[in-house]
Length: 337
Image (cartoon, rainbow, N blue to C red; front, side, top):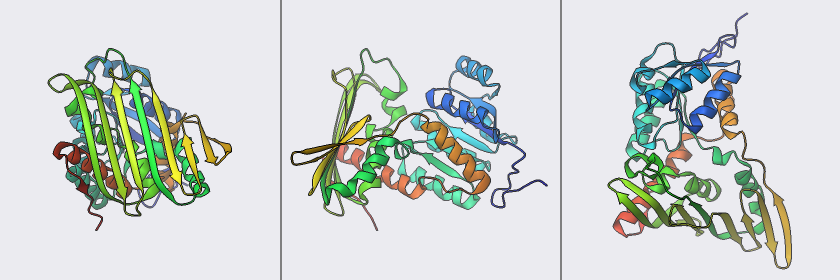
């Protein structure tokens, strides 16, 4: 007897038909997971480069779509996974939902808050899945931080510093203002960690610096955002990348009244006076596969996902407030009503 999921109508005996927009690193990991899982089948792919798209499709046995607009219109797709440049996320998500597809999109959902809100509303109206990937919340680092917070008592200050040097930056979309977006929007995971851990933000003050090479491109950027939370905690996010940096750093420090936590992606430390103890941090490997597996479980069995659209949208609002603060030089209040 064929089993049918009562919410979305999928049969466990018939694979979920998937289309992917994008041919980069995330798209490759998604495609590998989709093809390896008997519950799903990669049908079609749309990319920005015809040659790269053709090679990608040959690797995974999929059909090359002429464009993402043609892909989302196909009747032989149930789920569209969006893994392309940040600028296009919102438009593709809206078009896919309009064509009655379930959607997975890599963060950010959109570079524009109002467009993100429209997409979330449309998904609810259409009764379709809209899942915004935030694999940083699934990772061993974030889970270790969450589990360790009670050890330091009331937290009053936190700092998250990520610096990524890169020599001879090419003209890539991740260093392009129009395609990547404001750095703390494009790299929204930095702020989403904070809002997931500490709740509502009252105000944001942010400074940004760019080393532009030509119109729309830069060789380096640096953002420093100070977040004041509703509970009084102050957090600082520092994000930099590119040619002007010479030392890589990735440190998350949390100051509490009963101790200090210091985390890198590999390990953590709890410091209380002279006492120092090591905190194990789980692996970062396999998170895209885990995220994809959870999406399939949700569509087939209704198993809850690890992140909801409200929390993702809130992080986007905070990131956009950082953008506005950097442009105006003013402190920006967050409307939490």
